[in-house]
Image (cartoon, rainbow, N blue to C red; front, top):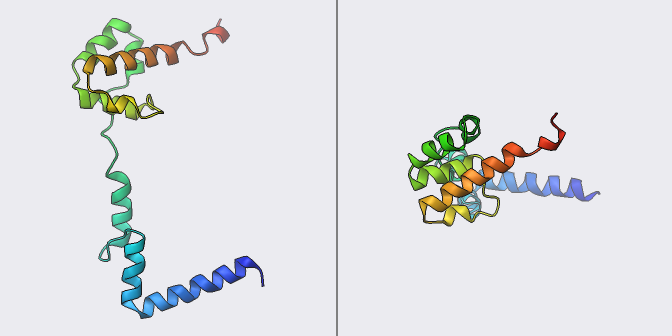
Length: 126
């Protein structure tokens, strides 16, 4: 018997036992961090709980009007909104910017990232 067949048999036995024994089912739910009353929605909810809000606007569209226009729009946002923008546009792969405490530092990071990404590929444009 192949390992795949053995695993299928094992899990089918485990599922049958969990259906018969509610305490086993509860223990399995606890093991996987699932609330007993709403198993599907709690898994989905826990994944979304740590997500940030969507960005207030697209900084790349504003940057097309010029750096000053983007700096002005970013200046109107508070620190959390700036962090939302960083997260929404993947500007913090190392998850360091989201720990910063000063608005100006985050704003400058967004500006430099937008500038760098907007110029990327210029060598191939004619």
